[in-house]
Image (tube, rainbow, N blue to C red):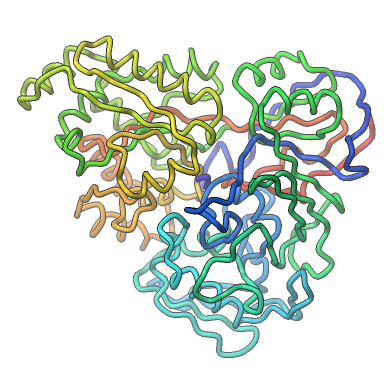
Length: 534
């Protein structure tokens, strides 16, 4: 995910630049006075994923952008900053020094959008439900260390953890911990379709075409009790098939803001003020892109093959030629703007070096060229993904050491097949669930990792990750996080490629665009408003 601390310099205060142009608008389209947000994200109900908006299954940026505004959690992230604050809860905190017992007191008189009372039993139900359903395609790994949940009265919740976890309050800010109405949701099966009943700032009405979400109308939830203060009573999220259609709608005024779906070329035009009446807001991003390896597959089981690829990949070319400098090269799973980052892969492999790659393969007795297929998803990370993989293919094949084929697969097929370990090498992206370096490490490297990766490193899993989670002062965990990053660079179960910036394009009369994302890149619709025309 898609997906997000302590002192994160680039996200604690959003580094925003407004690139302005003048011009008018002919209105906000057919949605009346509603503020319209556009995206090219696809949220689809399939046989493998029949409940795309059930918090126990949804685990990608597109779905979480919807869920975060309709559901409430015990804790949430503030407008800007990284320290969780209460939301459905009035107060929360650890009751022991080991960070193993977490107690919350709910606000008085909470209700769901349908008017049903929200009590501690609903919180208990929700946390137990995700563990009971245990869907490997969902975010259950975030809460896998929940051992027991108690509801001693209507407003008290006590969560017992199986191991110390100083990051647990941050995990409670994610849709994985969304509070569900126990009168609506089944305790042991997914809620199929697109209906959502929550207690968040907005209640949501969905419109579906061909089992695919076409539109979500968010209206202010009159029952909401929390710290968020919606600036707009109605926000419509519309989904477009192509980025060209989306740009046309923005220019025409049918869309007020775009948070997702523009290509690097489109961003470049906006950046240079080529689109009249639109401002571009840029945030140093925490989203990463990487290659993953099924380390049990015979074709890449020998780590020398993975190390040779690490010697050959030219990240600078990817960022420059494919992504038009809308990101930067990445040399670790932890981005460079997150504290504890270290350039482990550059330290280990340096700049692209075919001679070093040849030497690694020869010493391992591996015959060349090594034949591999790199699989990517065609419709989840943007149209440039195909160009990215063509460039990776070119880089690896020109060395003469590899014979690479590439294959594009729709997301609805790609994600479940990945979990089944059908791809030896695959391309993925990740947006953090909460703003802590743990969230770039644990989801990938624990035994219950969200990719079902077979990679095992006992030092990481049994010693280093548990040790980092015992540090309530997160900066004190830096040395152990650096050890983890160095081990990943040596074993190469993942090959980091680049990290992207985050952009919001908004018509000049839209306010709050600089706060559209919190420090975990979670969409905050309640921050968007409409001001005077320019």
